[in-house]
Image (cartoon, rainbow, N blue to C red):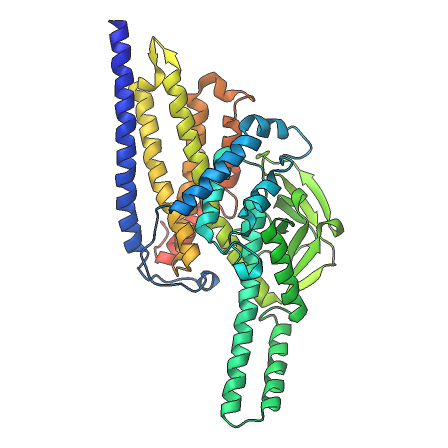
Length: 465
């Protein structure tokens, strides 16, 4: 009778797994349609966020599904991490001087080419988009991998890209003005001189990159970042939200991945500077997340000026927006691993001669978590797709993704620890790494509450009184 009961329970669990996969596909399809409709609605935007979205490629519904290329990239990254940065390796590295696995950055950034996904081919990158970068971050989140990918390949890279695009836009404007002046019969040389003088004045006031040397320095630095030869970190606190302007200070606390940086991008009152790490003072500090170290950075007064204050502010906001949007994908990957690991463990762990996962109370907890994950997946993919296509609703979709995915990741990690019982509380099990990453990511690039306020502001909702 006991054996019969056990076989019945195992058959039931297998059937539930099949239904889960079917429901997942159905849920994704439904949310794809819904999100596609929502993405077409025009909404008011505050001035601080209105200019963050890049120009849209074309009006189209959001695409939440992964392409074949993205799945191939996922398989390559997952295989690399399984080979070089398994949970046992990551746990061992947390007790070392720094958590980064030797050789892993080169393998991911250079050999696979993940560092240059956001950089166009003409600037030395892969010419991909935020969708592919989101796939990489999902896998890094699953493995809780200590790498400066989010800080360097996303935030710093997007900041520099904004400067390049701003400079190119100004050059096109100059050429257009010169052509119009020539058509009006104005002396060509005089016209060029006049436009150049105006442009120089605008650059000094901070409208765009400070000078041709600044633009050349940005392009050169971007090429090094895309090749994986250089790690750049934006010198702002990890908790800085996209709609919050960093306050220049002699020392900046809470800079993530500072100990891995080769170059710091430092916002100052007169613009954005590139400061070599060797010229800055870096003081590591204790952080909850052992896989994403923090430090206090004192960059000094040196460095190369890349942009004036106006262009710098816009570029930093855009970099932080991209970082917040793709951080949601990292949180999604972490939550997925937590659920998968919990389901696996509760199937194998037996109590009273049956899998603990067959107990109804645990089934309900995991089912609710799965539903949260379906929503998180839709939100994270919507944010990545909006960033990739320059959707004007990108600031809203990023805020939605962060407000939702941050909570889901924390809840998934907490359930993973609790449903593993005593073993989940031990140092040897990687569940605590996931919980610490989820908790720290929940306040990175803006807290959940701040993103909820952004959603309310962008949609015209009044806060509760």
